[in-house]
Image (cartoon, rainbow, N blue to C red; front, side, top):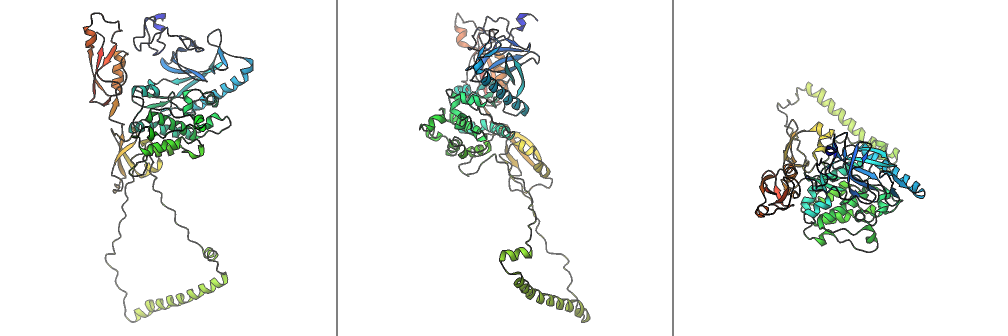
Length: 542
């Protein structure tokens, strides 16, 4: 394979014919310098991973766009590189540390390795970017993560006007909340939830990139990440729990709904107030505002202790004061109530046993005498006197039949029902899909029979599962190729037309654009469009 075919864009990893020109797919200039300390683009690690641009950096690592030659696939490559104590060697790949920092570096590196080893064991967990591999190279550790085409939440907010309305935010984040609940159930705490670790793909699914170590939290005090860190993340001796991530989720929701950065925990401890979201935007429901303020309590014990508690509070209905997305409890038959023994009754009534037995005898003796006389007259004297017992009724009194009613499944994630043996033994679920503006994708939005109606004999219940909103937002496609734009629109089920840009066509001298370059659209990014019926026009350079 010649050098021309081997050369890939440092950003999108597509092959480029002329590295001296902007990439025809994404417009990236290959001569863009790398950040200080980062691996240089075109570095190849282990004869397998082609390294591109450094897309992200924090106090613990660099994250690079990269290409896996063996798998022929794009990946994210995370390099452990604490820039406060490490430096790049003369070969460009080695990570060097001074003698006085060696022990701290090695301890931090092993914590980093353990964190991502644990994440790799979790496997594929929806909404959390999968860890594919770990390997050592040049004195440090690299983590290979699955590549998912996406925009950071920060970029998405920029394109959507800085904030998102409460109903849309709920639909966007509820699947992430469900994934984090399962994440915590496996004994893991993320510890790095912020705008930079959350991404949205073309289908408006939220993805959470891998977290960070304790040392990272202690080193991020001057960064935007600190806005979402609870106080315990700045205490090296404090215990982390799911409530730690709940605080960060509350901070993210605060920023998403209000368009305003939340006041950091340290500043709040010093007296700076955290205004309630509803004070910044009166359109935010009071119940949502209260839930966010609850999640951002400085005292960990006063916060929601689980993501499920927080999501239930966010979804609380103001009119009915009830929460959705809470799975109904399967009906379990009560065990027969144990009847108390005579000794127990005597003990509880504080009656002397001798007195009690005397009283019991006074009651039983008349009963025994009465029963004996009744038997004698009924079974002996009546037949001798010709008295016949009354004939039995031909038709006994009808007994009212108990009819089992259907419970409510609306608001429950379909996976919860399909993975529950208790539900599957009792009900036969028939699944249908439909768009819904209230419930996010994967959540039951309607059912038949409805709650309280008689359950069919075969236990069949039809569940209508939400496909999410019928509306999507116009993505950013200007500046990319026609193929890229078409792919983005097809993913969102948006119809499109292609025309030459009329303004550029009238110019005598046109700037040089790559072939099939999208220079404009008739619809602004972020505009709401209905799936399958919304239509836009893409303008190409003539």
